[in-house]
Length: 283
Image 1 (spheres, rainbow, N blue to C red):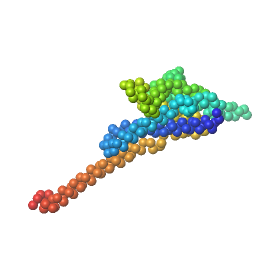
Image 2: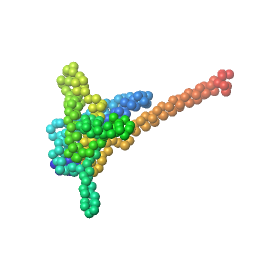
Image 3: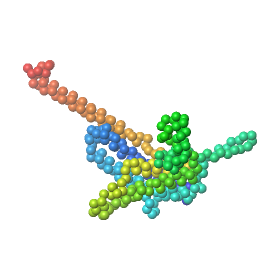
Image 4: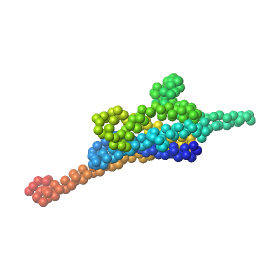
């Protein structure tokens, strides 16, 4: 496979992961805003309930596409396999630095640096323990949980992501089963049986977050190395919904104030028509 084809596949998958992340982040805002802006959201209950359901389905289906194992499709698994088959397209090291000393040139290979995520630390237990022991010696705050960086060649980086992909096998199967029996098809067995599919194949919010994060990490690495461009992982204004709800809150307050003013004006007019004095007492 040539470089351009690999980039095209990675870009398509990154776009899907980007969309899934947008849906997921708005769903997380929904849970938060539902508590903090309950009255404002009650102004349009049908709208918000419909949007919530649509976002859930859209997010789920994007993730299902990203990890699809059907024939004739491209997925995160496909991308990793193609990268493994075409490692000659990737520089083994991030860069090579050359310096001269006394007329002699010395070359140093600079590895890729990667900050381990919590789910990756088990693959580097010795280094994690060693680094955090040093962190504690130097009194670094929260040394037991401080992030650890590792130096990797590209084959090592790819191997790490292949391990992470394999670790998602149960979650990928749960996604596949829900996609086939609940979202993509009206599965007869599911409909006619008393079995609760989501109990047998649960997909929780942390699972969704992990699968989106991995898809973004994987495609971001491949595209970054091949194109030397870092891709965005979310919209810069993804959290602007709260601003809209704040304006709705101000609108409700103004509506209440306007009603109070109208009520006062009505009472004053009634008093005038009934012959009340300046103190509001009838003559």
